[in-house]
Length: 165
Ligand code: SF4
Image 1: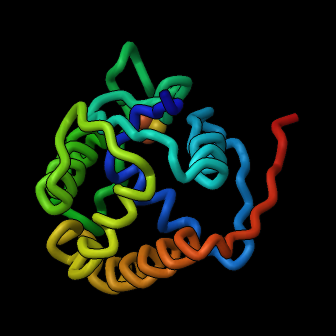
Image 2: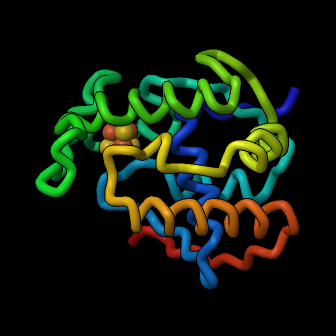
């Protein structure tokens, strides 16, 4: 059986969006989460199995803000008054919207390519998902998601890694 990774839908989608970069640099984050290593695993194995998890996923596991499975991080909502200030509440809103759109649910196991195929059909009108965010930023997010998807599907991503000191 293929290796599997527990992942929140929006974490996977953010990673695919990051693949739009002309020069992708994978580097550890000061939160100590696993975005860089999960990104690498996705780049190296398109058959990787994703297990949909709306709670603390493999990215959250070593994060400084993961307190016994609960994210304690907060958001700056000064320009987004309708967004909850607790990141875990906002994440759940986004993940539920993505699940509904992509017809996935907690515990589903799907390959990276299967998720990407759903995203090809589900990456339009992101204003519906991120309706509380700034519109221009959301338009740019949609452009980047489509470009990242295209780059991933056509294997045209060149990336570099920065190792933690
Ligand atoms: S959702 Fe919270 S716990 Fe998970 S990686 Fe982000 S900040 Fe860390």
